[in-house]
Length: 203
Ligand code: NI
Image (cartoon, rainbow, N blue to C red; front, side, top):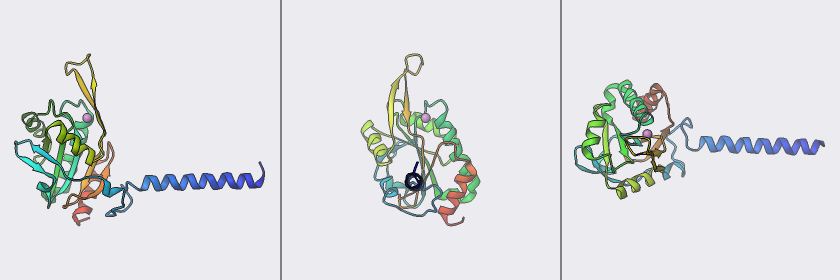
């Protein structure tokens, strides 16, 4: 390799490395929020769903509270209950100020997740945990707004007949419903609690 080749190779590696860092930083878990990059603003938006007590709700119902939103389903064997438990533990760690935070499970399995099923399910988690379901169209619209992928998968070996593949992301939205940050699977509850406290201005 000539010197020039080595130099060019190093330059290319550096460029790719920098692009990688920028890409990782953009969605912004540790990027020092609140920063609403144009990417972040694409997460969230209006929704119309039905709360686990049967009341119709919209995104505006929760204005004035931070929303901690997770999309999942009650038949999920492990991932969803784990994430909902992390959210619940984080809110316990936040303490009194958790009264300003609304933890929300939005079902991506409306066929099975009726209002009654949701009510029973969310009761296993935090007292503030709010279950939302709706028509398949309402769910699809909400999932689109939050960039959530979900897909029914037939599973004849199981009594449940089918399962759901889905993205597993916890979103933190501000008191006007604007995106603040997101948490990947298996986030430590302490880390989530710290981020929530910062978002509440008590960090
Ligand atoms: Ni799940």
